Image 1 (cartoon, rainbow, N blue to C red):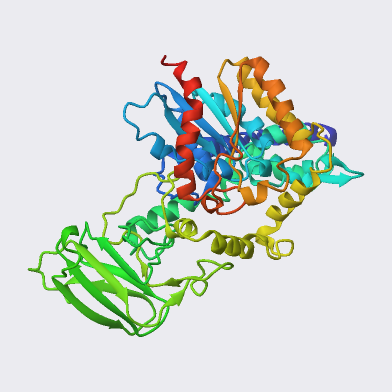
Image 2: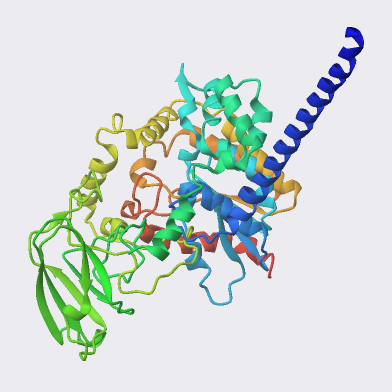
Length: 520
């Protein structure tokens, strides 16, 4: 009887195990499905109101999905790292009358050739008629090249591990990277990539709240918290964080009941001058002085300053008390200091503009001030900002490594390595898919380019690139020296807004032969 009593018990246990297994699989499958529906699809229907360069990984994925769901008559896609983002202004290029092509970015910060090689299928699915890869010496991952016996040696072991910890691998292509390098990766990186391969929520958690927080700030707060100033711009210029100069004269296109001003110091005294229009800037219709006792953000009520019957459209705000400095308010850390006035709220004197600005760059005093310097002042400022103590300042460590690499290539022979071969792989891919491909060596600051300009390494590098591209009908354009005024550069490789505006014409003109083939 004991033996017989065990049979139904075993059968019951066996059935219970299967039930648990089936329920577990169903729950896992449901979570897996919801993850893909919510985080890979629905999440990107949320309005994207983030600003220029404010959430690079979210914006790159959002832009990729936007490109893949739309088409243009002729689409030119500009790809590359932050150097590409800072080199051209697609918004300005697309403003041409009767444009033959529509320019778009497919770019994010620190995009290496390896990253683009992993993205090439996504780029192809973005419907390009022309792909332009803006490449810079700094994009070639010099951290993994060591000079040994006057030869450059690529450290593949360190590269594989560290690339697996970078945001692009963890956020955008974890599956592909895991399949390619699972044998070489340490256990911690392996498990991390495996988790991110399974669930989008794990990939996207680094930026998940970014568009949501920006949306809340734009719609439900006072405009005192923001990434970039988007209000009316004063004639005198304004810093990207909304700080004015000593005086700010601006058109008030939207007279809101209240605005906000931020003061670094208490008891800040301001002079407000009101003008009827731009033709009467030497004849104010009303002016008043006002002292703000409290530092920090303060309300500004127009009706408390000027009587409502007076018809005005322009206001000038001038600081009469002691000015703060750019270093004092954390606008800059190194270089020549400058005086600043007050900080304006996000959409000061302007209707909130909430369209997608993630790849739209604006002009601010941060860049413009560099162009206005004399040559000697700029060089002195540049040395202070970009060169002095570069080997010990964390924010300049990578630029220091790139600068040292430029010195190293002066004595090292050119030999193909990992990142170079990735460029060739990208070239082959677009050749096989019959998409015109142009590789442009982006402008470089003449101060820094001089270090390796005449090296045999550079000559052989370009020769090797051309020997691969030209037989495929592809084009290499060397624009390294296209911008000769170093005041157009913020650092060794990134152009200021004015520099990018200057380079825009050179860039678009060089592509005309390729684009004209579409519309001869």
